[in-house]
Image (cartoon, rainbow, N blue to C red; front, side):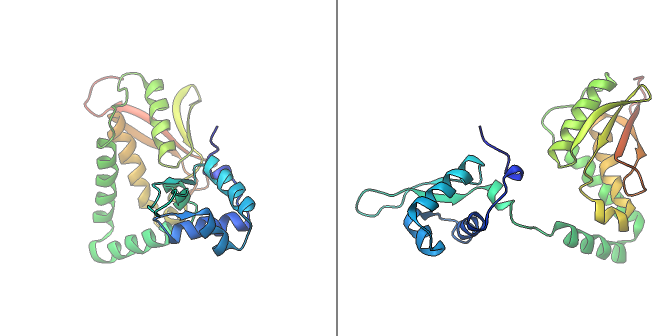
Length: 219
């Protein structure tokens, strides 16, 4: 059974091994890794086994050597995600530049358009008649985007709770980015969506309630 990459606590040598594979996307063999890391064959193989079980590395096509080809290992996309990517800082800079050149209303319109487009790109429609089922489907979609969401009942009403706001630090400075979430959920479900609770505004979670159908039909 493969462990999720986030569950693996990488040691110093495993981090160094992953970094070598990041720097060599064509892959490296065991002998090369031994030389670069200055550890034994046995240690390299143990680390490769652990990283492979976590889906952070994979076997790459062997390179012709004139003899028996040796095993080559390459980093996976999950492995690349283990390295920091400063999306928040870059996104904040982009948003602030957009504010300066376009203005607040245009920025909000672009965020709504982005959320709508992402919803329209989804392969399967969300149920538009059953609010409870729609909440479960939307929670799954938010979780796939990194929100760690779940469908809940709040005061008897089906709602969606998100425990990880992917825009948290950005939204603290620019609350308008929440228009992306609302547009994504509304376009996905064909319903009005209300932001019932927000972590940026002091809430415990980000909680969304589904309202009336946007096409005017009853729930």
